[in-house]
Amino acid sequence: MRHLPGCCGIILVFLLGCAGQLKEEQQTITPRGTDCTQIKALSPQARSGVYLIQPPRVKRPFKVYCEMRADGGWTVFQKRSGGLVSFNKPWAEYKNGFGNLKEDHWLGLNKVYSLTKDRAKKWTMRIDLWDHHGSTAFAEYKNFRVGSEKTAYRLNVGKYRGNAGDAIRGAHEGIDQNHHGFSTADRDNDGCSPCIFGDIVESECAASEGGGWWYSRCGSASLNGDWHPAGNHMGWASGLHWHTWKTSEPYSVKATRMMIKSVEKSTFF
Image 1 (cartoon, rainbow, N blue to C red):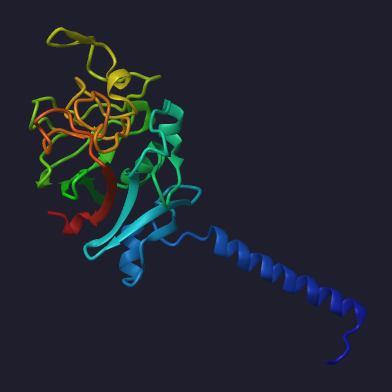
Image 2 (cartoon, rainbow, N blue to C red):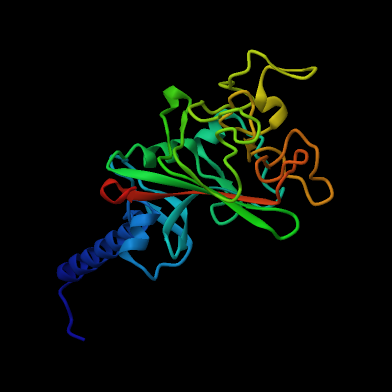
């Protein structure tokens, strides 16, 4: 190997070090796409897992779990499969997110807002449900989005399809949760002032239903309450409820997943 003068050797080492550091930083912070749908479209062989995304007009990229399906890439914003992660959290944690992206988690309302405020796209939300006996069901809603924190992350969903029933818009109990803000135990934005259910007076849905959700007059959809194991999943006010699927009495499902997929407006029907 040819000997380099001391000064040149120092400069070469410095340059190589900078290049290595720059490459490492690029690998760490360069986003892979604006959302999971774009990642899947650009890399059709991409597998489900954690990816870095950066929605338009968002300064810092953030990590999400992408569920890569035959119908596109879906950005997961809620997953529940057991009781290890408590979803009885205050407003700040529902705003910013909690849990492990590869396991049970809530992505964060701020991140969901940063995705769905992109008016160049429309969004479909899919909710997957699993019961304690191996059965599954799903509900999909077009035109999904949430508002900013100033609106209490107000929910908007459009046309429904699926086999779980339209619980959000009150197909079972007639209580429409669409266009309502998000509520937690420490920030009440529901429609009860109070609500009367038989001989029960309810002022804050989050207090009895648990966790955080887009409550109106409480309602028939609520997937962030207490998780109940098989044998202890019937009759509880707090649970993972989707009453249009299991209607005999309050039934807390075994597992849930909520995720969104973007569609360009020109191809959205």
